[in-house]
Length: 185
Ligand SMILES: [Zn+2]
Image (tube, rainbow, N blue to C red):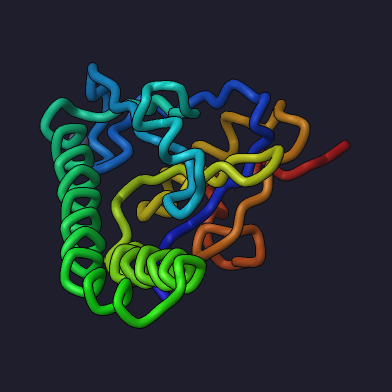
């Protein structure tokens, strides 16, 4: 499992970010990146592609923002190509052997299987920053655990702040210099 620290905040909460690039962690990046927060395998992705979905805006250098977008679009195109190619190759065979209902089920299976490589890459080689909406909350995922902690601290006023992963609260030895975030009341 990769080294991602996840900060979970309410969806309604307006997240505040440290003035640092979410990709390279440099300070005062002077630019922002907007990324889709819809889970990739959900119908919401299609809403997002139509410009209606939930997005998250975070500070990032221009170059870093581009890299995040390039990777996302590259993965999306690869996935479309994979699923499209698999359907194109298998459809004649499926249509000749299965009923209409069977063909629909087989195509759905192909779509789901086609999403697997993307999912595996997200786990083994996660982007420096990502956001995933789940129900009433959003997971903000950071590779830089210090940045994740700073982000969590800045958003202490949210209804809840849950940090998990290497930057999570279960770690006891780190962060002794700034323990002011601990709940005293
Ligand atoms: Zn950067």
